Image (tube, rainbow, N blue to C red; front, side):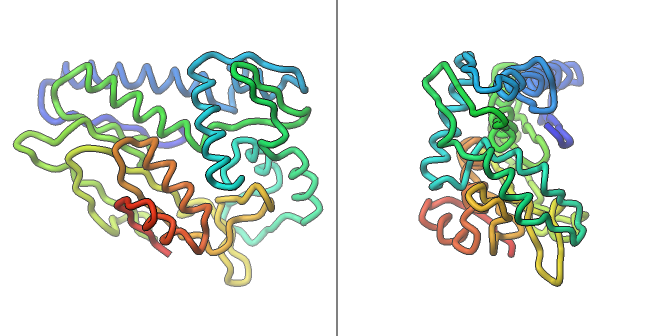
Length: 275
C-alpha cells in the first residue's frame, strides 16, 4: 500500500487482536500482490505488457476498471488510470526541477482512457500504454479489510492504511474514534475528527511536490495536459460511508483545482480543505 498500515481493535484480548490483524494483513497483501504495478506476474503486469493484445480480466479486476471508467467520465477525463506513465518525466522530490514540455508531450501520447478498448472482460491498450489502479486501490483495500474485520469480531475496529481509513462502528460506550488530520508541519494534527462510523480519505501534496520560484507544483497531475493541476488545495479530507466513496470525492476535488471547495459543497459531504 506504500504507507504504514494499522489495525486498531477496541478492547478484547491479544489473541482476538491477532486474529483480526492476521485476516486484514492477508487481504491487504492479496490486493497488493494482485494490483501493484511494481510487481511482475499479476494482472496489471499482464495488461501493461500485452503490447496491443487484448487481456481477459477476472470479475474483481473488471469491477475496478468499471469504477475507474466511471470516474473518468464524470471527471471529464481528469481521472485517468492510464496517466501513471507521466511519472517517467515528473519526480516530486521537493526540488525545483520541472520537465521540458517536449518530454511531457511525448509521454502524453501514451495517456488517455479514450485510447483503450474496454469490452468486459477484455481490455486492450495501445502499445506503450499502461494502467495504474493506485488512485482507487488503497481505498478498495480498506473497505475490503473493514468488512473482514466486521466478520471476524464484534469489537469496534479501525483499518488505517496511510491515513485512508474506515471504522466498523463506535467504540465501547458509544465513544468516538479520534482521528488527527495532518497539518503542514507533518508532525502534529491540524484538526481532530471524531468518528463513530464510516470512513475518511485524504488527498494532498504534503510529501510530494516541486517548488520553483515560489510556485508549488502538486503531484496531482491533469492527464489532459500532463501538468500538475493548477491552484489545487494542499490537502482535502472527506468523510463518507465507505473509504472508496471518500477517496473518490477527495481525489476528484483535488483534480478540480481552484474549484475544489465548490465541487465538495455541491456533493453535500463533510470535508476539510487546506490551501
